[in-house]
Each structure stands twice: as C-alpha cells, then as structure tokens.
Length: 152
Image 1 (tube, rainbow, N blue to C red):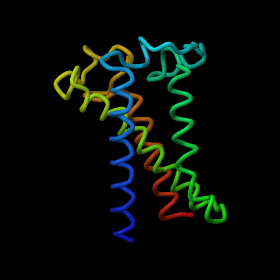
Image 2: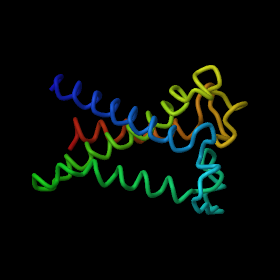
Image 3: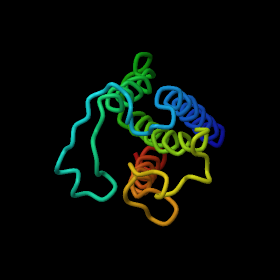
C-alpha cells in the first residue's frame, strides 16, 4: 500500500506541476484569465460564500473539466466502481489545490514572496497565509482520500 501512496502523490505532484506551468504560459502574470479572450460570468449566489467571490471563466471551466475527464482514463480499461471513482476524485482535488499554489510558486512574476492577499486580488478571503478556498479544497481532498482508501 505504501508504494501505491507514493505513486499517487508523485502522479498528483507531476500533474499539478505540468498544469501550473501550462497555465503560467497561457496567463503570464495576469491570473484568473484576466487578459484572456474568454467569457466571464458572475454567479451572485457564489458571492455569499467566502472564498468563492468573483467571476467564473470559460477558460477555467473548460480546462479543469478536461482534466477531470482525463483522470478518468482508467475506466476505459476497467469496470467502474465507487472506490476507484472516489480515489480518482481525491487525486483530482489534490491536483487542483496543488496546481493553483504551484502557479504562484513557479510564476516568475510572483513566487513565494508574493504569495499573499496583498499581491493576489482574485483570492479575496484568506486564513492566515493561505486563501480560504484552499482550506475548502484541502478538507474535501482529505474526506475523499479517507473515503477512498480506508472506508469504501
């Protein structure tokens, strides 16, 4: 089981790294598709939830839907089952969390020194040194990880 966990985390780390550098190449220093020719829509009900304010972009919806689709490739070669689905969703959740953080780490316009509310206006709500949205995603990842590996 330890070897599986190692492969799981290596896969998530590499996937998040590749996705983040792809997004850096696409967005440059302008996060949240600020300068991209994509549609943006505000869902007013989301503004009521701390950590989810601001527009949703077509670029991000299509990109992360594509990633969600791709991580389901194993089901082309095996029968679908709930345990595998939950493990895949946990990996996807971890990839999304790491990717967003790595976007700042690897982006030459930011880096760890500028990872703060002062320099990142699209993450409006922070809990200490991290965006509140990260807290939600990390909690969801932990729930899915535990469900997939120990409960289901």
